[in-house]
Image 1 (cartoon, one colour):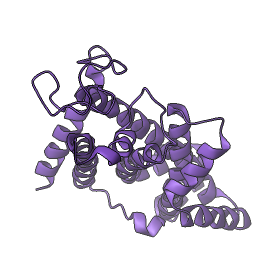
Image 2 (spheres, rainbow, N blue to C red; image 1 turned 180 degrees about the vertical axis):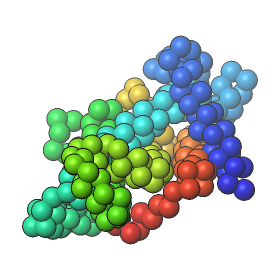
Image 3 (tube, one colour; image 1 turned 45 degrees about the horizontal axis):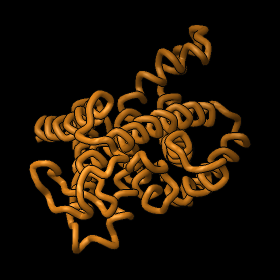
Image 4 (cartoon, rainbow, N blue to C red; image 1 turned 45 degrees about the vertical axis):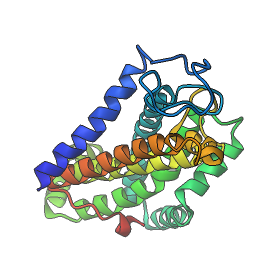
Length: 272
């Protein structure tokens, strides 16, 4: 079952990634061109129909895949890197510093990820792709840091770490040779799960008008724009909605498959 989950996840994520890569070289229409009549139903010329400006929905949904993957990968990588560094430092810190950092992480984790991301976007110069990546990545780093801190402390409590220290091995070598290899599988699965949450957070920010600005059409932005015309042109909601669901499900299936493949136990609730 785990192997099947992994393959389904790879298929769904691979399809979205393929569409995202395709947009770098080809699009059905210019995303800013009024290629057809307003709110046209699906047809051979426009498989997903057109929006209220006469722009092709398929083109916009394809661009949305590129934005979702860009923000998801960037935010997950940034959150994973910052969280891993902070978590390892906290595990090695003195008790007072460790307690202070742990309390800070608890406060950050208590805030919803979307709210923290909104605060970062509001504090920046304006909404953009880079701002969305930075905001979501920073918001998610606290969860990864808390998990890495717990995992690192477990590794440091093992007898072979004591033996390594007695043999004269420095803490830097211990982190590289023993800590990171032991925590990496679990961290990778946790980052993969955060990847899916980052995609949802980006769509939510765009829905609220705080994501990537036009003409780069995010799925959340498309859903927001289609609210007023949902009954006249339902594909404006169905197409980006299904695309978002397929990517998030694919990422979650992929993370579950990786967890079983790497034999990693990930409990994000414990990190929270």
